Length: 394
Image 1 (tube, rainbow, N blue to C red):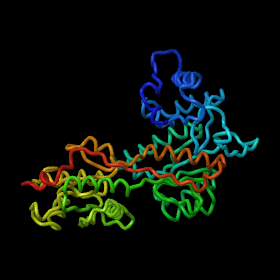
Image 2 (image 1 turned 90 degrees about the horizontal axis):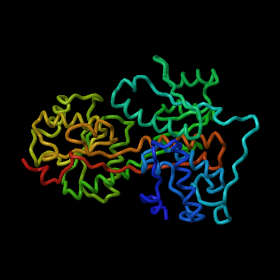
Image 3 (image 1 turned 90 degrees about the vertical axis):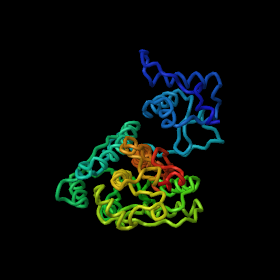
Image 4 (image 1 turned 135 degrees about the vertical axis):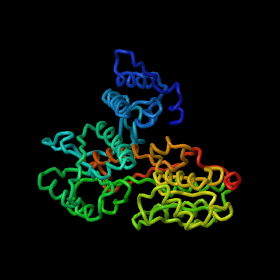
């Protein structure tokens, strides 16, 4: 079983002082266990990402080791099947993949992702983008595909920039992450190969990678219910484009929690702790345990950290009097004090999956156009969430 392959004895032990490369060490480990029948024919090996996480190594290193075993015909590798020990048999049907055109070279297309420089000036947004970029770089390196960041020029719309890239012959393939609707419509009309992140465009035959935020909120609501919280609020922005508040409400329904959820929607997008404190007292009045929520879900980690500072300004203790749960699991959430309990989004893993899908699309692999990959979100418990009895004490 796959769980047996995750045991310490089944994983390769790497010698970083050896003259043999890490790729060859991993290939040798699995080769010996295949030949001595430890891993029998038909066994599915763990994914490169799983092995990479467990032995703390880049997944492309494992991928190249598996490529060596595939050339030796010890394993075969197919999308939607994985890396299987032995040769394909009738019990493991393999879809034939169209051969490349003789004139088409691997990695010929350049994949681009449009990033606005303004977003990189925001330290918090920059750190989140970097998580995605790390996943893209790893994913495209595995498949030997060129990846570039295209910075949106000042005073130019995304659509205008796409037109200029197309005119210059530089619009070969694209990662679509948070592009405006008119830009996305243009890419669909022009049939530009692309993968969409955080939006489902499979109805337009665009492979997509999503995060299941509702699942993350379902886990968080169950956790809040177990801690006996009886009054809950959602703090977010008055932004009609954000679905976060609705995802939080959907998580409550799926978790079958009957508690009402009070909406605290602030008009400004960059509140200070002082303005946020004034907003809270304006909505809830002077702090009293029976009048204020015992737990507050917050739209982003950055806003949650501002909330922690605002509550400190008001003399309210977290989590003794009020618990706080953020969203994103940003680096700031790990480093603030107290550590922020939050819903984690696997940005690097999502980007890695998107890169693999886009290369499959460029290679015309069957079924890629309508492929939807969904990543579950989970609750990361730190120090800002406590039982309601503690939260309600004065």
